[in-house]
Image (cartoon, rainbow, N blue to C red; front, side):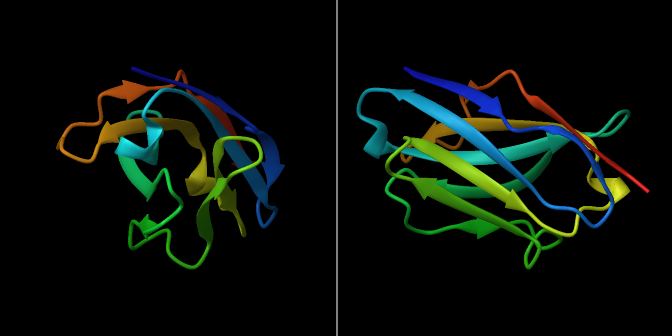
Length: 119
């Protein structure tokens, strides 16, 4: 059982940076991967990035690589997503999710946080 709460979304101008945070709680968290996804209006949910709870093995969608960085904050027990050079096309609701290492399914989801980048 894992609980996830996203924060840090907001309204920014194109070219600005924003840092999202996913607060993770539960037990045996070392068994989980944490991922970020996003969904824009009228579009399918899209994978953004993921990382093991240990902080090892960050992974990115090809289109995100170079602008977005996922990391584990050990002090805060969060998984953060640093987003740089934001574009209007990045506007979406951003969700964090969790899955077991042994699973192929992202079973746990947060409620999402809105990001809007205006031109």
